Image (tube, rainbow, N blue to C red; front, side, top):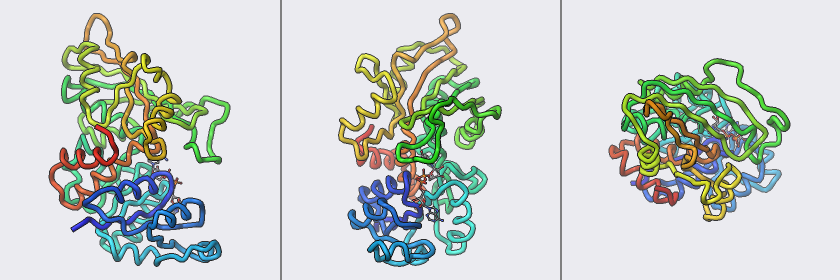
Length: 338
Ligand code: NAD
């Protein structure tokens, strides 16, 4: 029997998760919510997705959308909800709706770890989400950090990490946020990303700093990792090449920047031009020359899409599918990633 999934919050993340659910053979997309009317609602309608209103539905009706019911009707007909509403609303929905209706729910990285007590990145801790009722998918940045650090930790053992997140100022379709002409440091030490990584990689010592720049395309991370074992550059590159949902990109391919990586994703014919893999630059992998136990690398994170495969695997884990490796393979196949 297919897992019945509902999406609450049909924006940047929600619309991608909806399409991804619709692509899985073991899942059925029951429908998506419309909180207000927008082009997103028109796209959902054109894809044949059922639309469930949240609050007053008169704006939908004025614009020719006849909802298939309201959010309560959606909750009554699903095994699990993926909540992709803005920060803090996911927590509110969890307390006021999902717990009351006893519906399993996934919330996103805008919510705090304490909201669910379980935070998730499939290749790191799939089993922690098995049969859980409420799980949080960590943010795009934390997902990116966890994917590569988990691989490095397993192979070489991590003593400690320092990472800096150079964050895009806003998503491409967002006209309200910035900066448009400034570099804005996060004035807290560490930035919240370090503790957030530890909600998944519990034993990794990590200190993070962050800043925002006038770009919409991707985040860029620079990492310095102190290791327990010696490493060389070739082995580090090989490790990243063999890590699922990580792609090694090269200057030789003219993939020098976030702009070229996103152009590459569009040229590959990816849906919406997405790049769910974390992109590590081959030429930017290095080690300190003497000790061989300090690894440096840079990676790019497509904030709009890297968490989408995680939502799909988390749905399987929470509904009792035990084999994390198999779930990731099934998901990867539908995304055309390795
Ligand atoms: P978004 O603003 O693009 O979309 C949110 C959607 O929720 C909108 O369609 C809005 O109309 C709807 N909505 C608002 N209030 C609602 C309510 N009460 N009930 C139902 N729907 C409601 O937001 P987003 O960027 O997709 O972010 C969603 C979550 O994903 C946040 O927790 C965010 O931190 C996280 N996240 C975002 C990104 C990113 O880069 N955009 C990356 C990773 C994680």
